[in-house]
Amino acid sequence: MSSPLSADLIGKIDKSDITADILATPDHLRDALWRAESAQIPDLDTKDGIIVCGMGGSAIGGDLLASAYGDRLVRPVHVERHYGLPSWATGDMAVLCISYSGNTEETLASFEAAEALGAPRVVATTGGKLADLARKADVPVIGLPSGLQPRAAVAYSFVSVAEVAARAVVGPGLRSEIDFAADYMDGLKESWAPETPEKKNLAKKVSVEIGDRPVTIYGADLTVSAARRLKCQMNENAKSVASWSELPEADHNEISGWSGVGNANGFALFLQDSDQHPRIHRRFELTEKIVASSGVGTRTLSIEGDSRTKRLMSLVMLGDLISLYVAVLKGTDPTPVETIERFKKEL
Image (cartoon, rainbow, N blue to C red; front, side, top):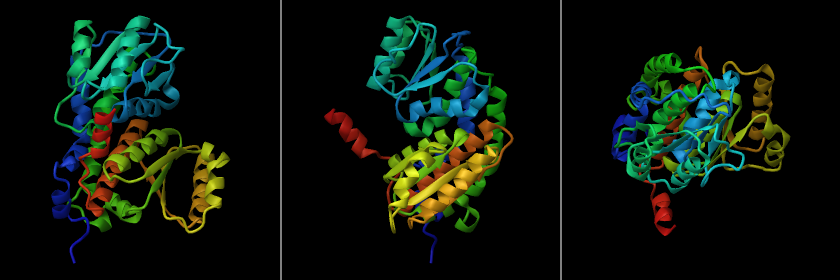
């Protein structure tokens, strides 16, 4: 009997080959560094930090960057997923507006709000109205490559934020760390690729365990943004119900919900960092025990690496592939997001 996740079947269901885009994440990281450098972003040194404005796969770069920095952050990084800017925003904050299409209405509103505030702006986009407005206002534009699904441009989002953050002195430059992460991920992707059989392929193993069940993804510190990313990928790629949560906060409320559920139809995935606080490690163990007692399936993932960027971006690529393989198991083409497109038209 053929494997439910054979390379041939994956190719037939993934008609637009988003698989290739996910496996190209290391190359995207390198290309993104070049594109950000080419944008000639000036030194910003904004004492109040930066605001990253975007939605979906464009916004997640801000969360990932804050996670990659950890306690190396010296100024705030705020991610704004809304129209405009927060009421407390100042003119001494750099504003990075990311929209893959260049036509995301919430991000356009943020770009205009930043102008009214007098804050220095940078844009990352493939074009659209945002690029037009930026060029008219002489705002630096990080040009993103066309032809990707916005969610598949996660490396470009992450690097764009990292480069603006370095110019705004919110933390150290990460160019070397990103380069090393890309090389490290090159060594991992073969073991998770469609050609690698399930028994040797962690991404396939986890996807089979999840199946078509709703999944809750738990993270802590470094892995919180990866948990949020995987939740969104399960939604868009696998067309599955998913949620994400954070430790230790979930241990103060959410675990009560699991204790009141019996024989639940679901799955919980715990994303651990190999360099996490020992008390967080213990919390993961106890939380998984409580969740498993409700009857749902559980699995813990932990990625190694000698830098936060290596561990984080490797986990992102692994999660993206897990969501893709869940889609294949369901017989669902991962690329179209018809519900989102229909909603936009109705809006």
